[in-house]
Structure formats: C-alpha cells, structure tokens
Image (cartoon, rainbow, N blue to C red; front, side, top):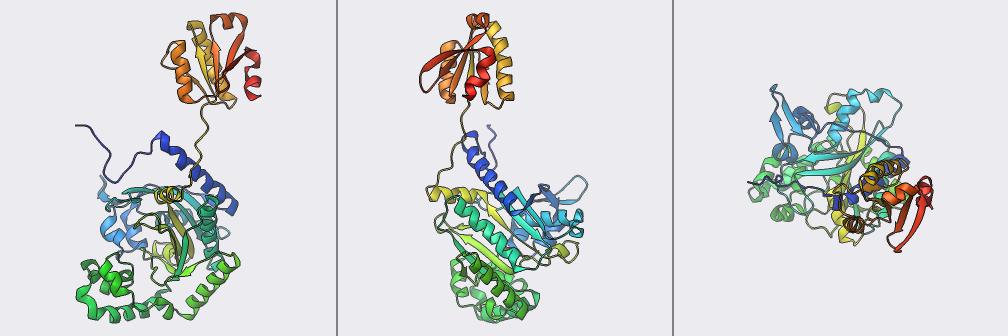
Length: 417
C-alpha cells in the first residue's frame, strides 16, 4: 500500500514554495526594520509549559494538543502555539536581566488536533512577534502597527481590525460572575462544551462557534463595563495610539481570544472572504505569562499570524506573488571532454552568483536544448570538442534566438552584460 501524508498536513512542493519564501522574506525585512530579533524554539516542549501558560480551561489544552510520553516517561507536547515557547526561552536565557524591552520575531510550525478545513491544518505555520518588559500601550500599538503595515505592504486593504480589552484578574472576577448570572437561566440550552465552561471560564462561552450559543451570547454583559480604572485607562491609551497611527479599528467586546494568558488588550485582523476561519492574525497582551511559567513578573504583548490563512487571503484578493527568477543558464555539452570542462564551468558560474545547471541526464544536444526551454533559462552555453580546441563557448540567447562566440575567460563578463 502506498504511504500517504497524515490527514491535516500538506506537502509544500517546489511549484508553491516560492510563495512561502516571498512572505518569509517580507516578514524578516519588516521585523528587522522594527528592531525585532529572530528566535527559534523546539518543536516540542514539556506539557506543563502549555497547561500552565496556555491554560487548562482552553480548548487547545483540553482537546487539541498532541501529547505523548517519551522513552523516559516524561510528558511531551508538540507546540500548539508560539508564545509560550518564546516565554520559556526568555526565562531560561535570563533575557529579563538585559535592558528592556526584548523584541522577538519567529516563524514556526504548530500542531493542533482539530478537524481539517479550508485554511486550517493539524500542522500549520505562523509568523509571530513578542515584546517583553514593558506595560506601555505603545508596545501594543507597535505590534498592531506591524501587522497592519505588513498586510498593506502585501496589497491587502480590506481587513478589519477588531480590538477589545479582556481586563485583568480583578476585572474578570466580577465579569465572570455577571456572565454566570446571565447564562444561568439558559444553562440547559448551552452546548456540552459551554456547560463545562460555565463554572471554569464563562468568558469562553462568548467565543463559542455554536450558532445557538452565539444567539444566546449576543445580549450578554460586555466586559468593557467591568474594567477597573487601570485597564480602562490602558484601553483608552491603546485607542489614542491607534488614532495617532491612523489605523482604523472596531471595538468588539466579543473578542476574548482562545488562550487564558491574555490580559487587557486583545485584537484580531479579520477577513470576510476566506470562510469560517476569517481571523488571519490575532494577539494581545499577557502581563502574567512569564510569571505563570516560572519567571519573574515581566509583562508582554504579541501576535500570531497564520501563513496558510494569509495565502488564502492573498488568493481571495487576487494578489499574485511574483515567481522566483528561473535559472540563468544551462551548460550544454557534447563529448566526454566537454562534460569534464562543463562541470567545472558550471561550478565557477555558481561561485559568481549565477544560477547554472548541467544536464545530469546526459541527453543528446537536441534533448539538452529542450531541457533548457523547460527550465526557462536565459542562456545556453554550448561547448563541444571544437569549442574546447578554440577555447571558446557559444552563448545562445534563448528568448532572442541569437548566438555569439565568447572566449572562455570572457564568459562571466559576457553573461553579466
């Protein structure tokens, strides 16, 4: 039986990888411009990191993590999101002792056991930013500004930025009680998942995807009416910062995000054009995450941006990613002497920065020219016994169907011209 890839995963083949490389390059350049330094963390961590950091009451921890015991009996989990791992690395490296803020960027694979659907996979990839060490709402505005600029630089202008405050522990205690009072008369109407959430984390009921629960939640109390003075001021500061940056936003009290570590700011960039999974980028503030996973009291803010969903968004907007340039030249050889020289010439061309190929199938001359057409090369360098004896190569300009003779020592300069 033929072995196939696991359901919910994908192979990114050479005819598509240029899109990923393009987006990754754009992200790195912008991150450099904003002063973010790249970090790479393991694909798996001890399970405790996510149960403590992400939260035991979240769907991710309860239903979606790939968790197993290693040969030493330790509980290991494939990374379901990026922030907790970066927080762990920040603590382990004692980066909190450096001058703050600390600004990280990353591209990472994540793993969640969930139903595969358009734009959502069991293995997926994210861009991420994290800023540690500051409580200033300038940091929140900066990560939002980064995402906004990134989308606009790609030509995406129809996303809606939705913001909310999820308060702090003091705000949320009062708000959770208000939600329980609201949902209690409707308890039996809730889905089984939300019945479990009722006592532990009623805020997650607001985020339920069940149409019936959404209908019940539409008149639920708003957390914005329960913010303490500090959280209310922080939310006002965020809005002023976004106004100063001329970034449009919609205040949406239903945004609570799916992770327990969020405090104060929560935001999403949402598209209506890519189906049910319309959130392309989401993030917010997490002032106690570092402390929760064993570090000092250091605040943080950041976001995750799904690359698969971003590609869907670009497709939906009719935005084409430019394909990478084809090979520059194919060295076409005839005879054993020419093959030996052609190998060296090909290596020398590559050293000089040219994309060069030699036909490894050893086709005849006609076959090599067909191969050159298939590669889309600009030039074919033709070398046979006559050319070796004279110390020259024939340069054929494939698009113009013309040819010129060039001495071996002048090939590099001729191609550069």
